Image (tube, rainbow, N blue to C red):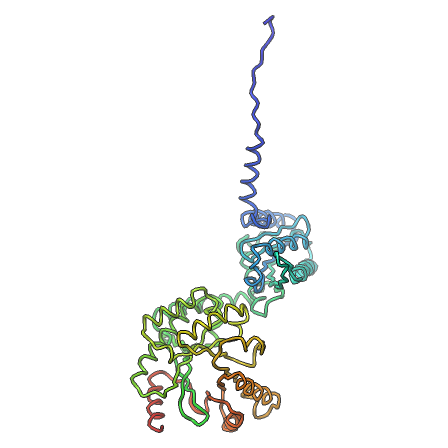
Length: 459
């Protein structure tokens, strides 16, 4: 065409492709609910922060956050989590990273905190306290404009240089966060080697407990309960751990470990099965008409969504008569969700189980809450019983508790009774049942059978 050159070309609109690529990138690197960094991006940013710290020798920090009592707040379809993310982002610098690992677990990465350790720690503490203050503010969420409250436990791990890798730094922050929870929640704790020793010891104990459960090292001791006239009316099943070739381990040591590791669930089911087996065997004897064996139910067991199913299955497998059993629940089990607690207790009652409130007088007892729960008895804590002889305030609390129980048609049990003067006071004030060393110590089942024989012979 007149010696000219013709050019041919094609034009593609790649807008959709670019948008799709951006969406894929966001899904790969960001939490879809909050828009915060996800675990993958956090690890990338943390690796970069550690490398930078190795070059400039400045301190950095990882803050592990866990929302306290999160479940009750998270009934607003995720809107609360979005609000938590928004508040967190407002507490840090643009160069810092806020990530959501899932559920109620968030991580904050702080970089370039300076070369002075004390100043760096102060900067971290200031950010941590700002975060706690922001997250402790009420949440007004949902269509109903309900007000929700929560708090946050913060664990801090400081790093400088390349002495630790990213995974180890996160583990240290996690250790510190669990220390904050163990110390009562709603606080900030820094990682320490002393705490790591405790964690390692607990981990070793948890492994030994699992092995002990598999090898039959656990057993139940029975602690007799008597009426104020001295007649046997029941017993409490107490878990004991007797490791082979080792001294017995105190429940005060292993129960908290079982709770924190989740081992309390299989252990609690084992206890329930053993208690049912004992009750079945006791039917061979002429038990008092109202005799019942008390089984402690942990807060974690009670909160388990399969709790009722597990109880029914154990009853079916053992063929036990639930009328011979009673469950002891602490206030910790009930306060998380009073409506759920009430419904579960009603279902337990429909099976014939008695439900007692354990450790009464040591928690956050609200008369208004208790009166709405289908309880059968209050168990007055041993710490109050010990004070009866010398402390007027303890006597006043015990007297008030007994009067309140009578007004609500609840039975009363006093635990930790060790002296005759304590017994006399409780009998005078109308306590129904007594449990303590004054009458008997906790004993293996074989010894309890002998004790039972003596009691029945006397009766």
